[in-house]
Length: 121
Image (cartoon, rainbow, N blue to C red):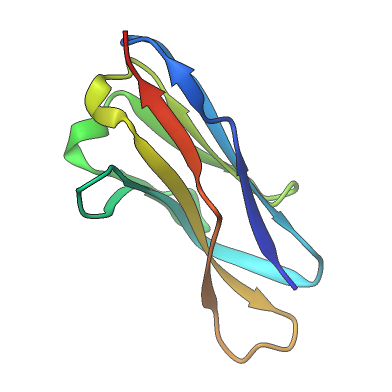
């Protein structure tokens, strides 16, 4: 069984930084694309950043230049470095990854449980 476990959320003042981590536990699997979503209360879930297996990245316009998504394939971990945080970045952040276990015929999307980020003065 593969699980995604996020960490690194918390409360920070505007202009501050946080680094989220998403580690895939288990064995015998391969991760293709991965990404981070967020959902604020009363708002639709929003795709924040994605990274391909080759390292190509993409971001929603509102975080470009402030957030950076990276991955460490040896550790099966994806990171989201968030700088210059704004109150509107407050949300629960979820990581996702397209994972194929050894005997799976196709890749399936897995989700973490989420980690809360609160930006407030």
